[in-house]
Image 1 (cartoon, rainbow, N blue to C red):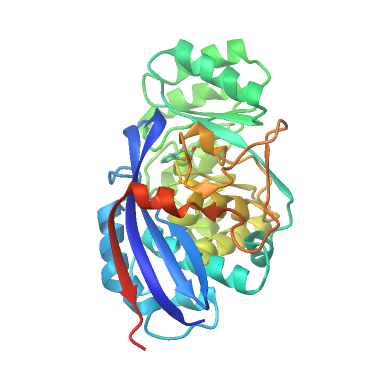
Image 2: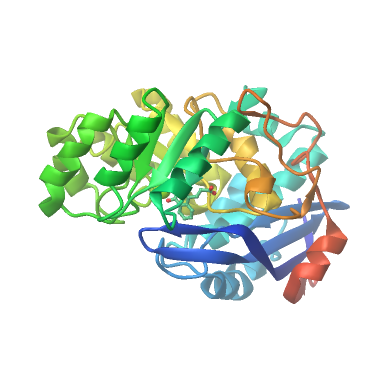
Length: 371
Ligand code: OSB
Ligand code: MG
């Protein structure tokens, strides 16, 4: 595949409801989109980083820089045999996985269209529909949280994840369990605790959580292994897993029993499929995490969630939970049984809405191949 041009743009999208985690509140997104043109086809990818360097060190500015000065010039320098070959070319850049993923995934989109296959099928996906959960942020009051949970259960979502932090944890889990004793419930701490909180974390065992996500340090494995030896609740790692090697090490030392795979965090489909392989071989269930994506990133998450090891409901949910108008047609919708149907058309299976994307754009830059 010879890439003819790459377009980088930043769009701004207000969220329909703020999203709050232990590291802060988001009211609107700054999203960098990558469009690749090759073989008469257009492929799209999304940089999934947050606006602030609080989930990971990447921001829209660092991603723009890394794409602009390194990844895009490299992608334009020669013809590629496969998307995996591009992923290998990006290896000299340490980290910056979300910048890498946006460009690599756009190339996978093109590859699947060129082959006339749905992206899910090209990746090795086997599921026709994917099970969906929701991630509900910290609210202003417990009552508002209960209302939100009820609304999502009514919509059919299969599991509820709530964000926790010191002061919004045991009390909240207690109220949720009293109101909804039987639901599939989990909690995501986004690194809000340390091993000094071990007794506190152990007392969460009573709430029968499916898992607790990333309770300790954002780059830690060793302390998580210690914690997992002391608590019943399975630990799921998010922030700490950046590669298949990380997944292997985490599983080997007992740092987690479940892994949340995010395409951006691990650097694109090539790495995500390797993480999936490792987990499948070791019998560790995985699920697809979310980063408040626009429809482009969301469509990629749906394709990845079709892989056989994605056995648990993910954080991939309907467009309307985030956006008044999403930037793809059709928008992502969820069935009454809490699933998303995996598209059967070639490529992503959702059309980027170009006029809407153009209207939301605050900066744009075009890169063309010289040959
Ligand atoms: O830790 O999974 C996380 C959103 C932003 C940053 C980190 C996380 C999240 C979510 C939201 O939990 C998932 C979603 O609904 O997209
Ligand atoms: Mg998380």
